[in-house]
Amino acid sequence: MLRSLMLLALLVLSPLASALNVVATTTNMAMLSAAVGGEHASVTVLAPPDRDTHYLELRPNMMVALRRADLLVSVGAELEVGWLPPAIQGAGNRRLNPGQPGYFEAAAQVELIDQVPDANRSMGDVHPMGNPHVYMDPVRMADIARTLAEHMGRIEPEHAEVFRANAQAFAERMEALLKRLAARLDTPPGVLLYHKDADYLMRRLDVPVLGYLEPVPGVPPTGRHLNALASELRGREGVMIANPWQSRRGPDFIGRELGFPVHVLPTNVPVGGDVADYEALLEQWVDAATP
Image (cartoon, rainbow, N blue to C red; front, side, top):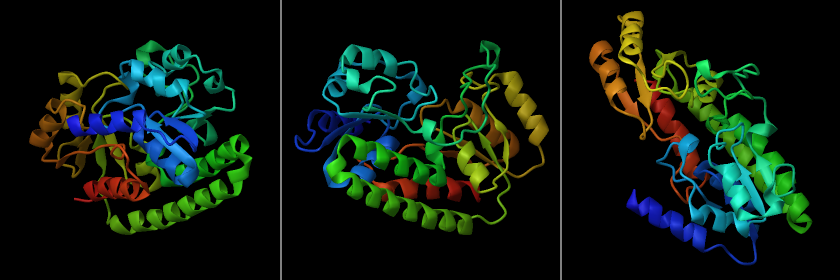
């Protein structure tokens, strides 16, 4: 973790002076921005990949990075709502305000699943606009890359064709990746997820989702909920997948009670990760879903 934080600091403090200065909220968005921007973009990232992006603490270096940015690339759909709006306000960079040329939301470019317009607090940490974890779907990421290329091209028209070509190259890699992922699956028994962060990938590949450890999004699993899941799924085959920042108590209980293999997997590439790292990330999830 210390190494990740050191790399993060270096990336924030050392943008290339001559390139489009892009600030990405997550490492997946930084990967995509770098893939599309290529040599004409210098990308910094705000959130380390080993933290829950829903609940980051606002830090001064975020506002420093945003203050001098030309473009902010966020996941959107209120994933970063707890810390990004005050960071933008604190930076005082009007180009990054929502609706301005320097603001880009990935989730706003594609159709979202699980839209709940009438969400209320009893439903947990539900995102009314839909599930924000679009970065787990290579098809949606290809679509986002194309719209990001057009967005970058409006800021730097002299490089617009390069951005489009880079986005097309990324889309072609995602198309090939999807075929590889589908080929790796052999009648998956189904996955039990801690949070609804891999739903896009599972739906894309027709992997059954058996349930979630969180009784409602953002609420840690209770003993009552875990026991209900164990009773419901007893006798079935399946796989338990959680994220590194989540408690192991619930996943380990499921492993003991149901005999499910327990995997702890990231949802973001490492700091400085490239397209190959993103491909490896999704391959890791698919391999885990096929015991």
